[in-house]
Length: 139
Image (cartoon, rainbow, N blue to C red):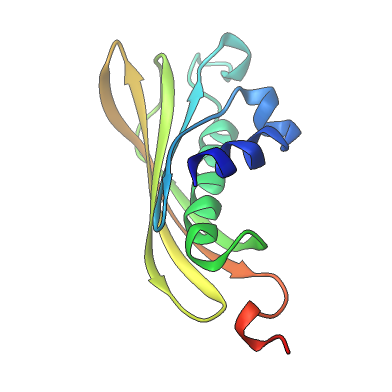
């Protein structure tokens, strides 16, 4: 599953631009890392909120896709930033909370690592929706 997930990530130009890496991918959970660079910061020297949002958004979608299949989209998500992020990388860890026939509700915590010590910088929740009909209903 990890190899397949990495192929999908490599096909996303924005993920490649950010240098995102898929560290773990199994049914119901994912771990996605983004190395931090100067050009990903905002004017106060913190990681830009859009980069943190990207990590949460993509991790949520991967988690949902792990239980719904590869043809999914994020239909909504919410994020709470709990502390400014400064460090070496951010890592988003998402899990599936509930799975229905066509959607999954997922949760994600985003941590910033500074010299190996991780601190929570954001938490998010989202709904991932299957595109089209589920395979079981196709005749």
